[in-house]
Amino acid sequence: MKISGHSILGFRSVTNAGPSFRGTNPRTGEPLGPDFFCAGAEEANLAASLAHEAFATYSRISGREKGKFLRTIAAKIEGAGDELVERAEQETALPKLRLQGETARTCGQLRLFAQVAEEGSWVMARIDRADASRKPSPKPDLRSMLHALGPVVVFGASNFPLAFSVAGGDTASALAAGNPVIVKGHPAHPGTSELVGQLLQESVQECGLPEGVFSLLLDSGTEVGVALVKHPLVKAVGFTGSHNAGRALMDLAAARPEPIPVFAEMSSTNPVFVLPGALRENSENIATGMYKSLTLGAGQFCTKPGIVFLPENDDAATFIDKLKNLVLESGQFNMLTAGIRSAYQSATTRRKTEQGVKLLAARPSSANDQELGVGAAVFEADKESFLRNPDLAAEVFGPATLVVRHSTRAEVLELARNLGGHLTATIYGTEADLREFGDLVAILENKVGRLVFNGFPTGVEVSHAMVHGGPYPSTSDGRSTSVGSQAIFRFCRPVCYQGFPEVTLPDELRDSNPLGIWRMVDGEMTREPLTTRPRSLRPA
Image (cartoon, rainbow, N blue to C red):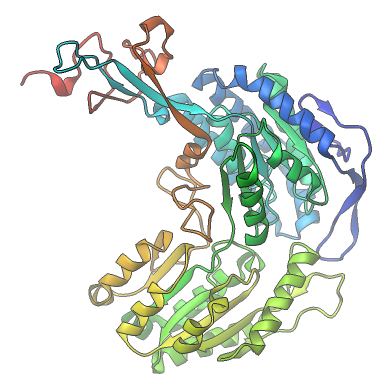
């Protein structure tokens, strides 16, 4: 494959030249060729128009056809894996092993959603049969299922050049639901984005799908993204990134004449509660795990543990000493972009000056500003300072964390109640700890999307049960997840058919159930056709 530096509009490559930009090697600060040319409002309009035209056909193809399409994309990514990893390593400075794992995760996501589309029960078909004899008025025949929304705009993420970008989870779930996708590529890895975009373009053509099912627009700024979110033919947005950017997209979408949903994963500090029994039995091992988790990927994970709550005792001192030593022995961590490095340096500098906060250990950042290296840092605050200053609970994107000390069980619960929304919360404890702090779990259930016990949150499994979401401000909609098969429900809406003849109904709602999917019939789940009585309604 060859990187052209141009956006992809359906089956075409955009050849008109807007302003240009280049990727950057975060290890050296050196620019990476070729030049990439920014798309603008004209390209955004064409991409949206193509996607709208494609929606009429693509939204109605079978689950088997959508599954074939998603599996084709996965196979092409695997076939180009070495080339993708090489370019992504240059643009992100992420280790090759990490990028190989991310490639596998991306393909796994695509195949998971292929399975969901092929099986078909995700549409949540419901049938309430008519009852003409019901008094005082007859009951109509009602049948409902989920339908795709329309063109979806996906914003690539800086920290996952594959799994949360062009062919990542947002794209896979939107395509599986029957929505054309327009990706706004992230300027931190434009070459990787274009290479993956070419593979999606080839897959659309190979599977005989309409041209507008996929487009990729490149831009170093915000113009094309704003144009896409405001475009009247766009029906939803998927985003992973900073709180400021996510909030701006939410406000843009809400201000449209026809508001649309923005599913934004924005910021999370992912509190860790180390309870007394676990601290007494395993303080050094927990501290070692904490260090590995907070520095994984240079701390550029949305699930990085950014706060750890510790009791005020000798066991906590052992934990802190171990964590401090690990930080002081650490080397440089490469950030993804100059902007992310600058934001991290500003946040850690500000934290040093905040009242009630003490710097426990830190490594200096690289003196060469072209090299995007930073040092890890660990801070400490007491309970009163933490509760007095809401900024201490804000995300610091990078290899830093804050230790908050408390003295009593009541203080732990007060700290938990005062947390905002986060993606995860972690509890380290023994069985005795869980009995004593059972109400902590009940509090945290209302604060996060995923509770972790005796582990760390930085591994996010791609599965049917995973929830990668949480109350605001961690996401724009705490009812959704951006990882796992339930992510498909973001990009669809329910439609009800009342009194329709059998031959006009979608296959999912026909009496014969030709797809063999699970359906709710008169309040009971069944796969049986309606030519026979559902098993649950038969006499014993």
